[in-house]
Length: 306
Image (cartoon, rainbow, N blue to C red; front, side, top):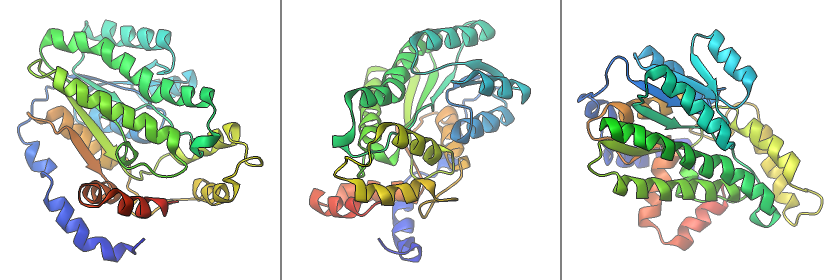
């Protein structure tokens, strides 16, 4: 891959082809007390967006899977509830608590909760794949489907789904996560077509590398679910381990979670939110390359990604 300085021309070209998010957001539809539910607020993107939206005047409902994280969020002044996106009962209980607090209203849903299971596709057992999809896909869709009648009843709403660059550019040794994000993108694209005229808009946010605990959590799952000793891919896994354990940004162009917050704000406030929001330079780059390169050429580039 090229050094960072060699990407500047690409960066200017690709960014110029996309809408100016700050300018487009001038036609704001936000109201002071609009309620927004965010999943996965224990750290990283979810916590950053909860803080940013609360500062902006939204009534934020921050949810997390672990009760200790919920208590910590409450100590920070959030209206917080437990919501485990992999558990149907927890989804219903969490949403009921939010709707009880708002009198049955909800303007925005940011589906942020999720995780990434590393490993070669041939090393992924059925139950491991099921766990990946229960959280990243099935739970996200279940919560969205429960929220839709509420938003439709008020004739407005914003559903934002945190996808990934891996939702359109598959990279090696991330097969479970790739597949879950591709599935989310398919559901979001379909929902967008089915909700035309309802006042409810669906947007995907597609981050590249973001500073968070994602790699730390992924390494724990790798240790739990992948048998290094028996795998044909064990030599490549050693390089993957180095990336997951590296302190600080593991790849160039890593941005803070504030970059995602900026897109979430636009998706909530623009009169006509975008269907997709790229975040970080690699997402812009591979989004552009996927449109212009033959698959074999793109594969050659993606094979070199650690």
